Length: 403
Image (cartoon, rainbow, N blue to C red):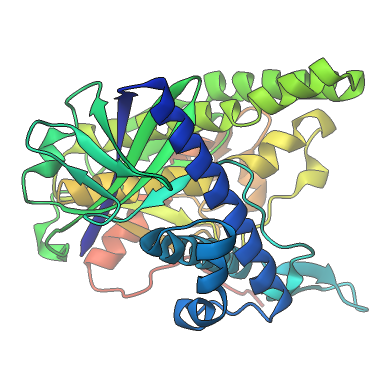
């Protein structure tokens, strides 16, 4: 399989004028992306870069001053964004009740978009060897609309990715907090995971109270607390509410400044949680996670002041981080259906919704089994992983019909 990572490198510029050149190129690149996005939206969502190039290439060169490879990068950036939105839309179908009161779902596609995708944050994508290169002295050569400039990395943590074992891709130029960064995509082929190499089977339950609850084949449970993240997100929510109610220009400036701060903080928490799991269990580990695609969280049963956390918690992001961190060290992530994993007794197999006490975070079964409700869910998920290793292609739990 192909392992894809992004190497983040802070860079320093040789002169202030170089920063002006980068800002100009980034803004023109952003405007060009917006222009292409409007065309895609108005013309039936054509996502074939060859067809778009025939129509838009000349305008990108003349109207926005894009160089040849930059113009191609604009087309790839826009089509990739639309394809990502299309994939996300398929994963979240529209749900509604029919005339009989039954829940139905309808697949969503790009035609559900009301407006073209907009590119608000300036960026600049540079093609390897054409628009960016690394020199023998360790500096980077970057192309702008006017001329090439030389920048220097601040740290050397990235050098391991430039030893020839990784394939280097597009470099994205970004600026934040007065600092400049290069985000370079790197890829490497790693061996496919096989069932017979499994040493550990770990069931991972994700939630609000605990970011991750992991149960392994030895019977040990590891909890990754989510209290710190929960409190942080609630503070940001209340801060946004106060600033929005204030409505002044200064309040809007603060809102703009903190817009991505919460997301970056939460991404770091998910990175740390995924890394902790991968490092603790090591290579040849089968991590088993619930497939939460199309899972609807019943917010009407949640207190109004807590619904934001319920619907916006980044479970998918933690999953993606764990997938590539596990693959990097020879482990694997298996996704299994989430049906009844929180309602089933991992000891006797009985499925009863009433046996889970949400208020006290406990699971009690008539057979005598008692455990934390997140722990019992992780145990059920781990057992599905064992079934997969035993030869069941698509393990899942089903409720037995009576009568």
